[in-house]
Image (cartoon, rainbow, N blue to C red; front, top):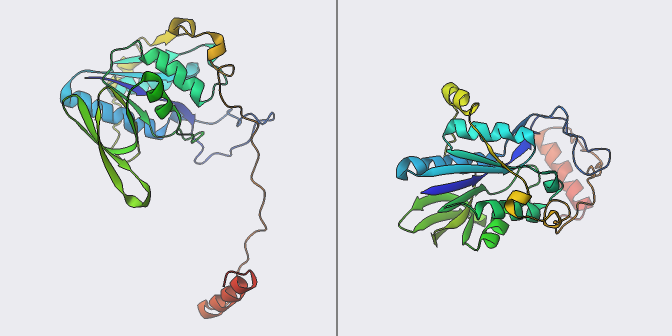
Length: 262
């Protein structure tokens, strides 16, 4: 079975002081550590588990700057067979649609049975690339998948719904599946795997290699425009209710009545 995994390098902002860039077009990246997108890491692990069970190949692909090769090499260190990076100034500034379009052009030229992506990117949270990619490839898809079972010519998935519900679907292959975190336990790369991956080639493709005109790529080929980022307005702050639990409860009830909540 041939599996393609789409991965993205994102900034780790969990404990960082995030600042908006002076032009409002994004955040200041200088000094921020970079890592594989969390749900993409689970997608990679799921692909590797399938590969170990059914043989085949796992190809990882990303659209990103030179630094994103570190993510691809880490994927290969864990067991991915091949790596592809879409690299061209023409890709700069692209939205989810433009990203999916470039990925579709690249993946459409490969032999694949299954395409896995993370359910969302932690830097923008748009959740659009996977479903848009499926539409462009002309294959079925499922999102927020937390269970997978490969069958003959199909995959049975359990996808997370609101309210703790799980929807079971059988989807014919080839298909695109976006993976939710928690579906598995991502492995760590071995020292030997990292050393071997450092010497391996990464297939780099420009827009022209994909048959993409510059008008279809990056900012020029995007369907949406980011107008800017702003910090959320500062609130009035918290009011501390002193006293015993009983006294504080009485004060809280009075505040709620005053605000019209009771």
